Each structure stands twice: as C-alpha cells, then as structure tokens.
Image (cartoon, rainbow, N blue to C red; front, side, top):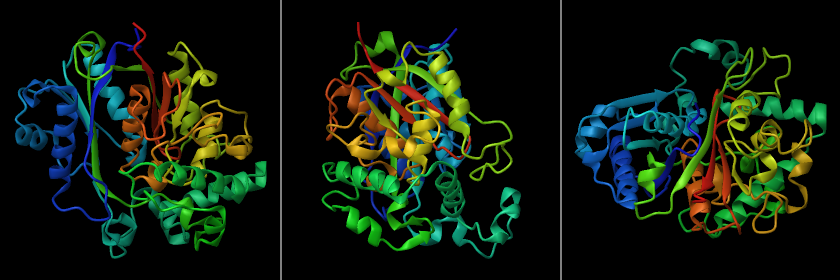
Length: 386
C-alpha cells in the first residue's frame, strides 16, 4: 500500500514575513492555519488531524483550542528543524489516506528574526549533545558545519563559488518578482555576491538564508473530497523521509562519504513509490538554508550525477523562466523567507495551481525537499489529471 495520489493539499496560508512580527509563535501559527482553512473553504471545527515540528512553541492542544477545532484523532510531531517540513505534510497525508483523520493541518511557525533568539547566541549555556564534539573546536553555527562540507565538495569535485553564486543570484531574481518576499525589489548581481562579507569561508553573506518571523500552513484531505472544494487539488503523489547510514547531524563526518547525506536515503523511497522520475519534474523547491545544499540536493535527488551538481547550475539552468529546472521560484529561504522550508511547500502548491509569481509553463509536477544535512523528507506534488 502507498499513499500515491490518495490525498491532496487544498489550502495554503501564511502570515507576512518580517525581521520582527508582533505576537507569539502560537498566534502566528493560528493566523496561518486559519488562512489555509479559509483558502480551502473548510471550517476549523472540521479539522481532526494536526502535524507539526517538535520545535513548535504552540502545542497541539493550544492550536486546537484557540482555533475552535473539534475532537483531534491524529497528531504527530517531527524533529530535526529544517528536515521536518515535508515530513509533517507527509505524516498528515498518511493519516488522511488511512482514515485516522479526515481533515489534517500541517504548519510551521517561527520567530527567529531577532539575533538574540538564535540558539548559538546563548553562549552562557553549557554545550550538550552532538555539539560537544564540534562547538568547542570552532563549528559554532550551522553555517560553519556546512562550510566544511562545501570545502570538501570543492576539493573532491571542483565545486566553485561561481556555482554557489548561481543559486544566490537566481533565487534573488525570483524573489524580486514576489511581493511577499523579504528581498522583493532588492536585486543581487554577481558583483554584489562576490563583494559580500565572509560569514564562514568559503561561504559569504549571500550564501546564507534569511532569519525570519512568520508562519505557513497547509490543509490536506482525500483527493475525492478535494475535487469538491474551491481550489484545484494538488495531489501528494509520493513522500519520503531519510537518514543515511552512520549519519551525524549537519556534519555527516562518520559516514564513508560526508557528501552523500540524507537526501540519498530519502530519494530511494520517494522515487520507488512514484510513477515518474527526476527527468519529469518541471520545477523544484530545494531546501536552501545555505547555497551548497542546492548542488548536493540536485545530486542526491538524481537530477545529475555525483559531482555534477555545481555545473548543473550553470547557464541559467535553475533560473526562471528558461532554465532546465527552475528552482525556488518564490525566492526560497535565501531570498523570500526562512520558515524552516515550509514556504517552499506553499510555493510548490502555487506552481501546480498556476498562481506563482514565477509561474513555470506546464508545471504539472513539482519536487519539494527539506533540509539536506539533517534527517530529511521530500514530497512529489502533481496536478489532478482526472
């Protein structure tokens, strides 16, 4: 049994994105969920399934009570930050497909725009967990850990900063067309990119995602019911999660090949349960907390061979409208907003609906991925062909 095409995303909603928004994470979550339900034409009292990140400040009982939901018959949470986005949607879809819930909501609410809110700013706390083996030796922030993987890719496969600039400049160009993006009407040239200050060599300012306050949510029902609702159904065709063998979060140092991260495990089940392959994907929303994750994801999900992720980004291949595979068409985490990748899910839905500000012609299939570098997840979305 698979969940192939048995469920659909029928509503998406989001708050504004900003460096600082008023209210709590719970309040932002409720606003995004209500907007998604309104988009779907579904009353909150019908919701009986909830799926969210373990990092959520607002727990299920608070969300259900504040929005006036009825009895909840399914609820789950997924860990690992940016790796969870597609996972919470996939779990909600499995609940609906198996009858555990009839209307499920998945969301992410995040208040991290303020510098003091970031975990690595809490220097008074004693380092625990996996950080004991990296923080004292200078890998203080996630960017430091990804910088090490980028250096490895440069040494082993010839990845260059020009390849990283391809991603940064393309995503900014996409955001420049998106009024909801933090980087709307803020162009970025290649000259600007190379003039950016170092954050953690070889990564500069523009290789990093934004830090954003905001929330995004989506609503999942059966495909049969979706066909009677206001929005065109966006079918959840396939779903996968993955943790590669001997994985270590962010660094992956214990694996035989640190550059073959969780995407390689995730893609196995994703494509195994799909009726089409990478060559049939019209547009991709690839998790982009840091620019090196783009070439690594292109390789991991089978769009090119090992070591070819960097060159794949050349010649405008990932840029709208003429690229071979337009990527992150709303601006992504680097130029729209960073909501642990959940805004990528919303953009994947808009592409299938035909409502993106960088609409890809004939976009009847879309891949959305969560964080490469942590235990991850991915979704294949497609239009309803009935």
